[in-house]
Amino acid sequence: MAIQFRKVVLSAERFESAGIFDVNGDGIPDIVSGAFWYEGPDFKKQYRLCHLDPLGDYFDDFSTIPVDVNGDGRIDFITGGYWGKTVRWRENPGVGGKLWTEHDIAEVGHLETTRAWDVDGDGELEYVANTPGAPLVVLKLIRDSSGKATGKFAVHKLKFKGRENDKQGHGLGFGDVTGNGRGDFIFNNGWLEAPENPYEGEWIWHPEFTLPPMAGIPILVVDLNNDGKSELIVGNGHGYGLSWWEQIVDASGGRTWKEHLIDPLSSQYHDMQWVDIDGDGQGELITGKRFRSHPHNEPGVLDAFGWYIFKWTGECFAKQVVDFGPIGTGHGLGISFAVGDLRGTGRLDVVAPGKEGLAVYFNEGEGMIEMPVIM
Image 1 (cartoon, one colour):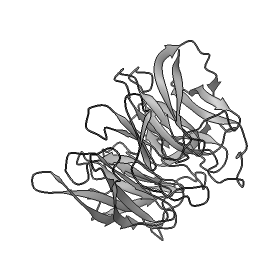
Image 2 (cartoon, helix red, strand yellow):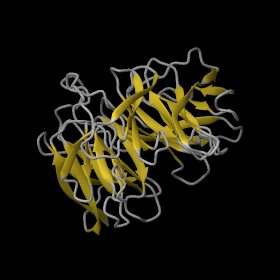
Image 3 (cartoon, rainbow, N blue to C red):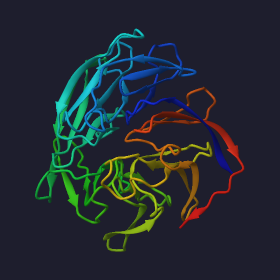
Image 4 (cartoon, rainbow, N blue to C red):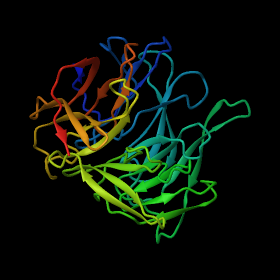
């Protein structure tokens, strides 16, 4: 059976990123998006946390990653944007209505978005921006001898082996490709195999596939068939298409990749997550359109749109449409959406930011909906 959701529109603010975390320390999740945070559990009270000026159709705010950066016990968040070229963190003052101080971490290039991954395998997240045309840089939060966060970051520019340059393209993923326990990086035209020491060693380049040149972020790395080798799930961030790429290793150890279409008829699949949305212990693909990702000038920009759950059947994906409609009715998932248990129900809810406004979808559990199968 499919999952039933109750949609609540929180605001008409058109920021494209959102996060879920306890802002005020009352033990109840809140929602943060752009220049505001919304107090749980009903999210009706809105507080301004900063001032963000529009840059045409955008804001320089393409991620909302919660972390206590300075070790004061309050959750801050990491963000950054295309125009500022800088990863930043906003400091939580602990008082509703007070503006949050902004701190620069590092200038890295034009950010599509920033993601949090455990790059060095120490059990803590590092922060990596997809910056087309710029090197791949990992930002590691520095802690003191007691383990307390210091508010400072080490900046690691990764070294490549077997690649003519160190520049990224559009689209970035991270995960264990080979099953050796190390996380590898995925570009739109190949992947980087992790060395034992990710900051000092050389990452080996494998130009084994050609994904869409405007691949979404993240490119997911998931072992769909439980054979110890991961597959890739790739959306087209600025055109039509969603697909998964099967990893095939022959008897001699040679590796090839085979593309399987999931949804070739929808566009702007810019963000996606692999989470257990139905509580069955297995991951599902959550993704949808980023509304007006490049307004007026890319394929599918005027199409009806929405967001979806794709459930892996063991052979293919079954698609549940959660929200869909024409402009003014449908709702997508922005450039960085959030998933979390907002009400303590044990079920995962979805917070959907975007140029069409900010909405929350409360997960009400399973109900009877026909799920079409997409081969």
